[in-house]
Length: 626
Image (cartoon, rainbow, N blue to C red; front, side, top):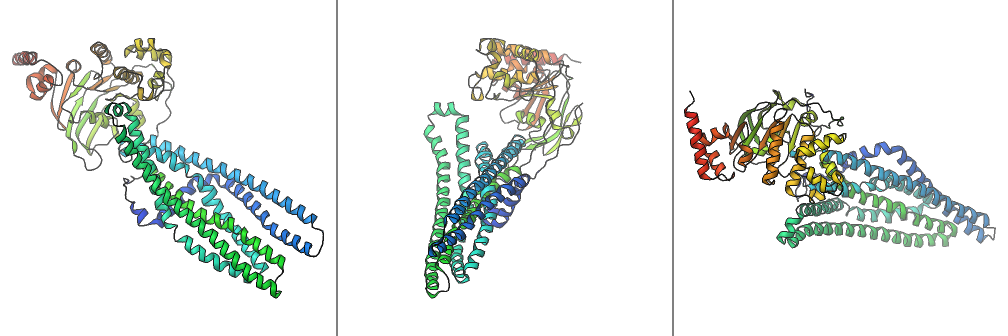
């Protein structure tokens, strides 16, 4: 039996992204920064001891440097008094070395913490992406998801060294320097503060634009990643269509967007740096003028003026650190908001690690749809209009119908990739929403219409989600899926690389690999979506024999157009426009359903004369029944 632990979502839905600024960015930037801080601190909290240690060492190195102007003042005064200065110079040299070593150790610790924060962020993003509900992946393109997991998380590196530690250290150092300057001469301190505060007002005017520009730059990178992912996913089609230029233009639009907004960030950054430089230079000139007058009047000594000027230039690093921290934090906040949007998407519950596979024969499962209504998320049309049908345990049931009838969507609902709007899907009489999701999917083998194959070896592809498979089981499914000839002629057998998305295999070979992968699970319910569409007649016959052979221990449900596949089914369900039109055997439907006869004559490539003869025979047989 399957586990019955309920499946619950862990996070609310996230809103779709558009090119325009989201409401929280354009209308409530303060709230965005608060959210970014909260999300950021969640990653920083486990590293708080290392942050404190690294930040403390960096601060200690900075304080060591603050003593240097005092010693320099002593050297100047000793030179004026013609006293020995060797001891002071040795002490000054020692302080420089200690400051450099301690600062370097602190910086290394903080950089290590930064990389650890990036790692933990990426691990959470990776697990979030792989456990996303299928409906959620419709909201963000794959390239954008990759950009958030790589480029955006990389910016988290600045959260520790710049946005946190340098802010604290810069503030402490700034206060310490100002206190020392005040002890030396309060008049010069007031002069300095007046100039610095004026410069601070000018710098602050440019900061609100940084977050928006940084976010737009990241979105441009995401647009580039999405375009490249699309192009590489259909690389041969683009080559064959001569569409390189048009696809390059799509990708370059994202690159240009990122370039344009990155230039805006760089321009603002440059202006801020220029403001700081001008502010310090103006402060130097003001202090030099006022200080020179005070030295001339005897209100302060020349050594004190030199020490004060040294402290003035010592203001540059902490002031720069504070301003840089504000700039970088806006960039980090923009990246963090994009990561947080991803983390708020709904996920499926994580399934336990797969156990070692047993060879116990499976028990076929029954399947029931009861008045199921479904539409894809958004404003799309209804796909299923209250469909109901039963698939008994064992045997084979086939779904046929025109394109867009909703056949493949039936499989998506069985696998719980999507949830019905109303109605119930039951497996062995149990509502599948009450079943533990991992156990539900473990009971199902699913072969998709395009039979995707992952980069790696054939063995990797067969054993996806099943790390403990012995060679005997692998050989069994290789033979069942008629892969023995292929594996035998490959240079490394099962360990041969198949290329990106299986490009080194033919379409039929990819389909057989996908079938073997499903059979390896020994499923109770096997879902085959157009599984013979790319097989030649010989391999199709062989695969049909495999399917027929497993129907005693597995319930097989297929979506197919080919008559050779459909005609052997125990029951056939005809769908049209999201509704169940008819259910019966091949002969019954030829006689009773006009759409089925049309499909048999067109999609199934059955000659009309043979079709009419089959329908006549079916009518005669049905007429003889009591």
